[in-house]
Length: 274
Image (cartoon, rainbow, N blue to C red; front, side, top):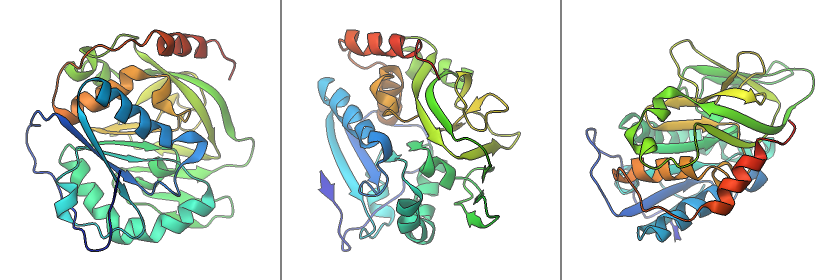
Protein backbone atom coordinates (compact mmCIF):
# COMPACT_ATOMS: atom_id res chain seq x y z
CA UNK A 1 0.00 0.00 0.00
CA UNK A 2 1.49 3.32 -1.08
CA UNK A 3 1.59 6.21 1.37
CA UNK A 4 2.04 9.52 -0.44
CA UNK A 5 4.16 12.16 1.22
CA UNK A 6 4.39 15.87 0.61
CA UNK A 7 7.02 15.57 -2.10
CA UNK A 8 4.95 13.29 -4.30
CA UNK A 9 2.83 14.72 -7.09
CA UNK A 10 -0.62 13.74 -8.29
CA UNK A 11 -2.67 14.02 -11.64
CA UNK A 12 -5.83 13.95 -13.82
CA UNK A 13 -6.88 11.46 -16.53
CA UNK A 14 -7.36 12.76 -20.05
CA UNK A 15 -10.89 12.76 -21.41
CA UNK A 16 -12.00 10.24 -23.95
CA UNK A 17 -12.50 6.50 -24.15
CA UNK A 18 -11.06 4.30 -21.45
CA UNK A 19 -8.01 2.23 -22.32
CA UNK A 20 -7.88 -1.38 -21.23
CA UNK A 21 -5.41 -1.85 -18.39
CA UNK A 22 -4.42 -4.82 -16.28
CA UNK A 23 -3.45 -2.83 -13.20
CA UNK A 24 -5.99 -1.40 -10.80
CA UNK A 25 -4.73 1.77 -9.11
CA UNK A 26 -7.06 2.77 -6.27
CA UNK A 27 -6.90 6.22 -4.69
CA UNK A 28 -8.20 5.84 -1.13
CA UNK A 29 -9.06 9.23 0.34
CA UNK A 30 -8.61 9.76 4.10
CA UNK A 31 -8.51 6.09 5.14
CA UNK A 32 -7.76 6.91 8.79
CA UNK A 33 -10.75 9.21 9.21
CA UNK A 34 -13.47 7.91 6.89
CA UNK A 35 -13.92 4.29 7.87
CA UNK A 36 -17.34 4.04 9.50
CA UNK A 37 -19.01 0.61 9.73
CA UNK A 38 -16.08 -1.13 8.09
CA UNK A 39 -16.06 0.96 4.92
CA UNK A 40 -12.37 0.13 4.49
CA UNK A 41 -13.66 -3.31 3.55
CA UNK A 42 -14.72 -1.91 0.17
CA UNK A 43 -11.08 -1.33 -0.73
CA UNK A 44 -10.10 -4.79 0.53
CA UNK A 45 -12.86 -6.38 -1.56
CA UNK A 46 -11.90 -4.50 -4.72
CA UNK A 47 -8.28 -5.48 -4.18
CA UNK A 48 -9.01 -9.14 -3.46
CA UNK A 49 -11.40 -9.62 -6.38
CA UNK A 50 -9.01 -7.97 -8.80
CA UNK A 51 -6.10 -10.11 -7.61
CA UNK A 52 -8.20 -13.25 -8.01
CA UNK A 53 -8.76 -12.16 -11.62
CA UNK A 54 -4.95 -11.90 -12.11
CA UNK A 55 -5.09 -8.10 -12.10
CA UNK A 56 -2.27 -6.25 -10.38
CA UNK A 57 -3.43 -3.81 -7.69
CA UNK A 58 -1.87 -0.80 -6.00
CA UNK A 59 -3.63 1.24 -3.32
CA UNK A 60 -2.59 4.86 -2.84
CA UNK A 61 -3.55 6.24 0.57
CA UNK A 62 -4.36 9.93 0.16
CA UNK A 63 -4.21 11.53 3.58
CA UNK A 64 -4.10 15.01 5.10
CA UNK A 65 -0.32 15.00 4.58
CA UNK A 66 -0.56 14.14 0.88
CA UNK A 67 0.19 16.97 -1.54
CA UNK A 68 -2.22 16.17 -4.35
CA UNK A 69 -1.56 17.34 -7.89
CA UNK A 70 -2.14 16.18 -11.44
CA UNK A 71 0.63 13.57 -11.68
CA UNK A 72 -0.86 11.06 -9.22
CA UNK A 73 -4.47 11.47 -10.29
CA UNK A 74 -3.34 10.45 -13.77
CA UNK A 75 -2.14 7.12 -12.32
CA UNK A 76 -5.47 6.32 -10.69
CA UNK A 77 -8.36 4.55 -12.37
CA UNK A 78 -10.62 4.26 -9.32
CA UNK A 79 -11.11 6.45 -6.25
CA UNK A 80 -12.84 5.66 -2.96
CA UNK A 81 -14.03 7.65 0.06
CA UNK A 82 -15.84 6.08 2.99
CA UNK A 83 -18.17 7.46 5.61
CA UNK A 84 -17.21 8.92 8.95
CA UNK A 85 -18.67 10.48 12.10
CA UNK A 86 -19.06 14.26 12.27
CA UNK A 87 -15.75 14.75 14.11
CA UNK A 88 -13.80 12.86 11.43
CA UNK A 89 -15.50 14.76 8.64
CA UNK A 90 -14.61 18.04 10.34
CA UNK A 91 -10.94 17.04 10.44
CA UNK A 92 -10.71 16.42 6.71
CA UNK A 93 -13.22 19.05 5.58
CA UNK A 94 -10.94 22.04 4.93
CA UNK A 95 -8.22 19.92 3.34
CA UNK A 96 -10.76 18.24 1.09
CA UNK A 97 -12.42 21.42 -0.12
CA UNK A 98 -9.33 23.63 -0.37
CA UNK A 99 -6.60 21.23 -1.48
CA UNK A 100 -7.94 17.99 -2.94
CA UNK A 101 -11.49 18.52 -4.14
CA UNK A 102 -10.61 20.22 -7.43
CA UNK A 103 -8.39 17.29 -8.50
CA UNK A 104 -11.17 14.87 -7.62
CA UNK A 105 -13.70 16.85 -9.66
CA UNK A 106 -11.38 16.84 -12.70
CA UNK A 107 -10.92 13.08 -12.35
CA UNK A 108 -14.64 12.34 -12.07
CA UNK A 109 -15.68 14.75 -14.83
CA UNK A 110 -13.18 12.97 -17.10
CA UNK A 111 -15.09 9.70 -16.51
CA UNK A 112 -12.88 8.42 -13.72
CA UNK A 113 -14.59 5.79 -11.57
CA UNK A 114 -15.46 6.68 -7.99
CA UNK A 115 -17.37 5.19 -5.04
CA UNK A 116 -18.45 7.48 -2.17
CA UNK A 117 -20.19 6.30 0.99
CA UNK A 118 -22.55 8.27 3.27
CA UNK A 119 -20.63 11.31 4.62
CA UNK A 120 -18.29 11.49 1.64
CA UNK A 121 -21.28 11.19 -0.68
CA UNK A 122 -22.85 14.18 1.10
CA UNK A 123 -19.64 16.21 0.61
CA UNK A 124 -20.03 15.98 -3.18
CA UNK A 125 -23.17 18.11 -3.03
CA UNK A 126 -23.88 21.80 -2.49
CA UNK A 127 -24.24 21.88 1.28
CA UNK A 128 -25.22 20.12 4.50
CA UNK A 129 -27.66 22.00 6.74
CA UNK A 130 -27.38 21.00 10.40
CA UNK A 131 -30.28 20.78 12.82
CA UNK A 132 -29.24 24.13 14.33
CA UNK A 133 -29.51 25.79 10.91
CA UNK A 134 -25.78 26.15 10.29
CA UNK A 135 -24.59 25.45 6.75
CA UNK A 136 -21.57 23.33 5.87
CA UNK A 137 -20.64 24.03 2.26
CA UNK A 138 -20.02 21.00 0.06
CA UNK A 139 -17.76 20.52 -2.93
CA UNK A 140 -20.60 21.56 -5.27
CA UNK A 141 -19.62 18.88 -7.76
CA UNK A 142 -23.18 17.56 -7.99
CA UNK A 143 -26.44 19.47 -7.66
CA UNK A 144 -27.96 18.15 -4.46
CA UNK A 145 -28.16 19.16 -0.82
CA UNK A 146 -28.51 17.42 2.53
CA UNK A 147 -30.42 18.55 5.61
CA UNK A 148 -30.55 17.15 9.11
CA UNK A 149 -34.17 16.58 10.10
CA UNK A 150 -35.66 16.14 13.53
CA UNK A 151 -36.88 12.65 14.25
CA UNK A 152 -35.39 9.17 14.17
CA UNK A 153 -32.28 8.37 12.16
CA UNK A 154 -32.54 6.42 8.93
CA UNK A 155 -31.13 3.16 10.20
CA UNK A 156 -31.50 -0.49 9.27
CA UNK A 157 -30.92 -3.15 6.66
CA UNK A 158 -31.63 -2.00 3.14
CA UNK A 159 -32.52 -3.24 -0.34
CA UNK A 160 -32.69 -1.18 -3.52
CA UNK A 161 -32.99 -1.77 -7.27
CA UNK A 162 -30.18 -0.35 -9.38
CA UNK A 163 -30.97 2.33 -11.94
CA UNK A 164 -31.43 1.29 -15.56
CA UNK A 165 -28.32 3.26 -16.55
CA UNK A 166 -26.20 0.74 -14.65
CA UNK A 167 -28.29 -2.29 -15.52
CA UNK A 168 -27.95 -1.56 -19.24
CA UNK A 169 -24.21 -0.85 -19.07
CA UNK A 170 -22.24 -3.57 -20.86
CA UNK A 171 -19.64 -3.56 -18.06
CA UNK A 172 -22.38 -4.44 -15.58
CA UNK A 173 -24.23 -6.89 -17.80
CA UNK A 174 -21.10 -8.92 -18.57
CA UNK A 175 -20.21 -9.22 -14.87
CA UNK A 176 -23.63 -9.55 -13.24
CA UNK A 177 -24.44 -13.00 -11.89
CA UNK A 178 -26.83 -11.88 -9.14
CA UNK A 179 -29.55 -9.58 -10.44
CA UNK A 180 -30.67 -5.98 -10.37
CA UNK A 181 -30.70 -5.31 -6.61
CA UNK A 182 -28.12 -4.21 -4.05
CA UNK A 183 -28.28 -4.78 -0.30
CA UNK A 184 -26.61 -3.08 2.63
CA UNK A 185 -26.99 -1.28 5.94
CA UNK A 186 -27.75 2.42 6.40
CA UNK A 187 -27.40 4.74 9.39
CA UNK A 188 -27.66 8.46 8.71
CA UNK A 189 -29.39 11.50 10.12
CA UNK A 190 -29.14 13.65 7.01
CA UNK A 191 -31.74 13.65 4.25
CA UNK A 192 -30.41 14.17 0.74
CA UNK A 193 -32.42 15.72 -2.09
CA UNK A 194 -31.22 15.38 -5.68
CA UNK A 195 -31.97 18.00 -8.31
CA UNK A 196 -34.29 16.95 -11.11
CA UNK A 197 -31.36 16.54 -13.48
CA UNK A 198 -29.54 13.99 -11.34
CA UNK A 199 -29.95 10.23 -11.57
CA UNK A 200 -30.23 8.15 -8.38
CA UNK A 201 -28.02 5.10 -8.04
CA UNK A 202 -31.04 2.99 -7.15
CA UNK A 203 -34.71 2.93 -6.12
CA UNK A 204 -35.53 1.77 -2.62
CA UNK A 205 -37.60 -1.34 -2.07
CA UNK A 206 -36.78 -1.83 1.62
CA UNK A 207 -34.72 1.14 2.72
CA UNK A 208 -34.90 4.76 3.80
CA UNK A 209 -32.56 5.81 0.99
CA UNK A 210 -31.73 9.45 0.37
CA UNK A 211 -34.56 11.03 2.32
CA UNK A 212 -37.30 8.49 3.19
CA UNK A 213 -39.73 10.30 0.87
CA UNK A 214 -39.01 9.91 -2.83
CA UNK A 215 -37.64 6.31 -3.01
CA UNK A 216 -34.26 7.47 -4.37
CA UNK A 217 -31.04 5.95 -3.03
CA UNK A 218 -27.64 7.44 -3.71
CA UNK A 219 -26.55 9.19 -6.87
CA UNK A 220 -25.16 8.16 -10.26
CA UNK A 221 -23.26 10.63 -12.42
CA UNK A 222 -21.02 9.42 -15.26
CA UNK A 223 -18.88 6.85 -13.40
CA UNK A 224 -19.42 8.39 -9.97
CA UNK A 225 -21.47 6.34 -7.50
CA UNK A 226 -22.65 7.75 -4.17
CA UNK A 227 -24.63 5.68 -1.67
CA UNK A 228 -25.79 5.52 1.93
CA UNK A 229 -25.21 1.76 2.02
CA UNK A 230 -22.53 0.59 4.44
CA UNK A 231 -21.82 -3.01 5.30
CA UNK A 232 -19.33 -2.57 3.53
CA UNK A 233 -21.61 -2.31 0.51
CA UNK A 234 -19.37 -4.37 -1.79
CA UNK A 235 -19.21 -7.31 0.65
CA UNK A 236 -22.65 -8.57 -0.31
CA UNK A 237 -22.78 -7.04 -3.79
CA UNK A 238 -20.00 -8.60 -5.86
CA UNK A 239 -21.76 -7.60 -9.08
CA UNK A 240 -21.31 -3.95 -8.09
CA UNK A 241 -17.67 -4.51 -7.15
CA UNK A 242 -16.91 -6.21 -10.46
CA UNK A 243 -18.71 -3.45 -12.35
CA UNK A 244 -16.42 -0.86 -10.73
CA UNK A 245 -13.29 -2.88 -11.50
CA UNK A 246 -14.30 -3.61 -15.09
CA UNK A 247 -15.32 -0.02 -15.75
CA UNK A 248 -12.12 1.35 -14.23
CA UNK A 249 -9.93 -0.92 -16.33
CA UNK A 250 -11.95 -0.88 -19.55
CA UNK A 251 -12.27 -4.68 -19.43
CA UNK A 252 -15.78 -5.74 -20.42
CA UNK A 253 -15.77 -9.16 -18.80
CA UNK A 254 -13.74 -10.22 -15.78
CA UNK A 255 -12.89 -13.80 -14.88
CA UNK A 256 -15.79 -15.55 -13.15
CA UNK A 257 -15.15 -16.21 -9.45
CA UNK A 258 -16.80 -18.65 -7.07
CA UNK A 259 -19.24 -16.34 -5.28
CA UNK A 260 -21.61 -19.00 -3.93
CA UNK A 261 -21.20 -17.90 -0.30
CA UNK A 262 -21.52 -14.19 -1.14
CA UNK A 263 -24.57 -14.79 -3.32
CA UNK A 264 -26.18 -16.67 -0.45
CA UNK A 265 -25.45 -13.76 1.90
CA UNK A 266 -26.88 -11.33 -0.66
CA UNK A 267 -30.09 -13.35 -0.92
CA UNK A 268 -30.46 -13.72 2.85
CA UNK A 269 -29.96 -9.99 3.31
CA UNK A 270 -33.16 -9.30 1.40
CA UNK A 271 -35.10 -11.18 4.09
CA UNK A 272 -33.83 -9.03 6.95
CA UNK A 273 -36.19 -6.50 8.46
CA UNK A 274 -35.36 -2.83 8.00
